[in-house]
Length: 208
Image (cartoon, rainbow, N blue to C red):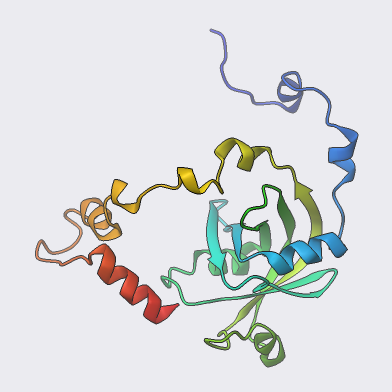
């Protein structure tokens, strides 16, 4: 029987050309001026982490451009803003301390990848550094940078992500409440009332 899965590094490499030297050399052990500038313009990041059971998780975080505070070339502070209180990322950080970040800037197809280790800090001075117009966060994620590199534009070019003409009208999807209702059949009382999209947006605005 012919296998259809790749299980070894040599088998994987047979499918691809050698890595471009520029791609290999672009990784830096800390943040340079270009990375710092990119972070200062970014209002949106994706956090990757994994727990002690090896299960991976990704979580979006957003704020005003530059909401991630660059302390120095090797340290970042990310405010923990109100969410759903599952705390998946925070629990994973406690368990393994490993973190990966993807920074995005609207209208820019390149992204910035930062990998490192993280701890959860309630230090008052660090929390104050991450204060915004709404609040001082309960805690911040302090990231020690181990690797930083710019990622090419191909993925966002293929997706045409920033093209407003391709943005989906929200009505083409059920509301969040409708989707949750369908996903929770039998898990909650039948008389449970789910929010409309409009009600949900009002609540979100009150807890941003």
